[in-house]
Image (tube, rainbow, N blue to C red):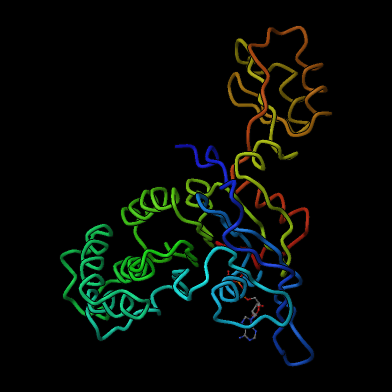
Length: 318
Ligand SMILES: Nc1ncnc2c1ncn2[C@@H]1O[C@H](COP(=O)(O)OP(=O)(O)OP(=O)(O)O)[C@@H](O)[C@H]1O
């Protein structure tokens, strides 16, 4: 299903963050890691938080999960009163006990969050099966591969069936097959949970997230429904399709390149309305099959936002 089709829950947000601020001491003065971040999370959605290294994503997720105290602002979980309202996978696989088996970890976390041991065991086995770790249930976590540990961490976050899930880089170090399994699992989970995801993998984010927020230097600089921000972006190219490709040596080819149009067979791509009119004038009277607006990819949008804000490339994710 298209990740953007689903509507957010009309009964209101399950989590609200207001004006969150956090600063850390540095050699001289303070580093403002969060400069007043507000966001809402709804049931039935995955909100992906994108940002270059050091933008403040992990700090934000840790504050939302109650692991770090903000210096200002507040987090509200209007519909959930208890401590068991969320599950989290933070900083890779560190939130598991390495000397316990995968199943023992799940039983431990399940009982810690209110399940009776029998139920925790049943849920644990079921989840290990779901993440493809049934055969590793009785192996200590320290002996699992990194990707298997990551999958076990996801199962542990979900053992008590929390309505809200925080996932900080859940696919880090995970192979393509496991990424695919996590992707389809998240799409299923999304139907009845509120999920906040941070990732540097733009294609993964684009495939699962119905909403996107870009965090730069401690501030949210862009936020919206994925499909809408990609289609409505001013950086999205126009696509002009000719009935036949331009002949080699056609002088219009050089003129098109001079206005930075990209020519690929019958297809010409241009950015900006002004350039589009210029290109259409240049092509006149050649027959044109169609003119349409393409949507940007999430990676394209992210790079455009970063370029506009002149964030140095050395700080960009790989
Ligand atoms: N405990 C800390 N003490 C001092 N500075 C910190 C601490 N934790 C984070 N920072 C700084 O705060 C800023 C934001 O860090 P954070 O880990 O939240 O960024 P991030 O967006 O998650 O980065 P990445 O993509 O690299 O994981 C960084 O400049 C980081 O060095």
